[in-house]
Length: 170
Image (cartoon, rainbow, N blue to C red):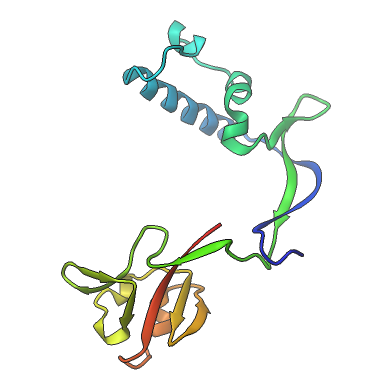
């Protein structure tokens, strides 16, 4: 397997049928988007269903938004049944494409004071130890892949342990 990609392409094949709940989620997201556009007068041309005050069908929504919604990974099989199209599998050896020093995906960093946040800090300086949520962490220069809570990895370390928070991107 390739060591970097989170997903590995495979020969496409049919998966499970798309559930009614999955179809309804797509329709609801689509309607929510267009209603917000309509309320904000953000567009010159709106879908017919919105102009007429009707409900869009799943097929209508998927034709208009399927590629953006899930890269067209729902398709009709030879019997007309909507099914998941499997074109990749999870790569257990994947790794991030890029990373940056500083915060997790939500921008959370080490808090060292009421209004003071740092990307690098000594363990003894950090006051939000229990709240930390990083997938990667540098501890005294050693790269650590965190599985679970950061606190479990650092709670027993000496207070002079240098920590660096890592944010990675896929």
